Amino acid sequence: MSAELASHLVSEFPGRNEQIDQLLALLGQPDDPTPPGIFVYGPAATGKSSVVRELFELYNPDGQQYALVNCIECFTPRLLFERTLNSWAGHKPSPSNRYANYARCENLVDFVNCIRDLLVVADGGRRANDTHYMVIDQAERLRDRGPMLLTSLLRLSELTGANISVVLISNVIWDKFRPRHGGAPEPFAICFPSYTKQQILDIVAKDCPADEPMPFFMTFVDAIYEVFHRNCVDLNELRHLVAMLYPKFVQPVFEKQATRSEFPRLFKLCQPYFSAASERLYLREISTSEWQKNSAIASAKNNPDDITHSIYQMAEGSTDSLDLPYYTKFLVIASYLASYNPSRLDAQYFSRGSGQTGKRRRGRKPAAENSLGGKDRQQLLGPKSFAIERMLAIFYSIIAEPADSSVDVQIQIASLVTLRLLSKTPSDDKLDGIKCKCNVSLESVRSISRSVKFDVDRFLYDFA
Image (tube, rainbow, N blue to C red; front, side, top):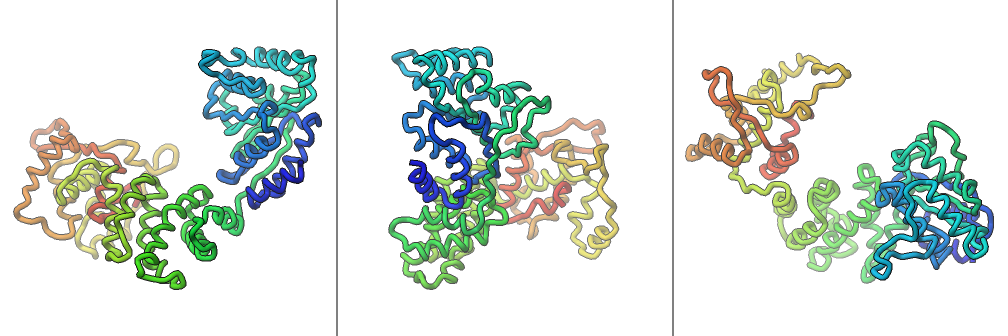
């Protein structure tokens, strides 16, 4: 049984042979004594939860010797206790029992007493010898549930007299997990390290479509890994990118634009999608369904610039619900820069004379530091009021070409005030003219800037 279980898990989870052998050795037979605590840790997306869940589902198919609980779902000790007792007792809340739990546990004392009644007293104590496992995912959240909860859970076997083992799954190492007051026994630690490149390729190979040749698919996966692995360290995110980009990579083959042997040409045709995926799909600025719907329209037969532009337009409807005219978008950008940039730096950022700008930049003084030793971030301080004349000066500086004479800038400013993208502020000195504040968020301004191909971060004091 153990050998068959190990071979199945190893084939299902490549690169986790050592961890699977350690877990099976600790579990042993159902009536074998086990450590009171097992600590499974490692970075995110390394197979911790998946391996442990699959192992226990095969180890105990009826599900009455283990309880899988997640600290995100069970956000109070009571939910944690009652979910565990339901699993061990084989109890499922349903309409017939009015969705009642097996027992009501308000505190740890009630939980210990219920365990004794269930495992030690019931059936003449026959279930007390069988090991029962309490598997807690996202276990680092237990640190916020009281100073004694974690210590008590690791001593459940001692408190109840039953053979109980608590399996903790966490992204945090034990040194940052250990209770400060002491008293908690040291659990047996099993580390799930990050996957190597070959292990990642072996795992993603399982996602190959049934009607696609494996060598061709793996060549694409290897290219995706080389492009994204420095920024995308999460295996799940990498698999998501492969699933979204592979249909666009193979599309020119079906459109007779290239053959499967012309990999460099296919890679070049898919390059716009790689760039867009790194900025849109991976950062979740566009949902998976929107990506699939909009990218299906684009084709390798089109101009790559048109493809990139269409992909960039995908997120505009979700992040910017206002369809603003071209010059109005630059007015919004100018108002944001005026609200969040110190006025003393306008000549440095927006001066048209390259020589004067370069001279000022060479003589630039270090940014002012706050009491904590860091630069004061304008984003945290909020928008500051600015004069309309200053915003117009920035506007005429950042537009690529002079505004058309038919464009009435004053009317567009009034429209922005009506839409509450700008708000007027009272001025102490009436001679200063009208002052406004920008009410647009940074993400919205970035979205508007991308629609007009303007890099707003280069002109922001916080990011320059």
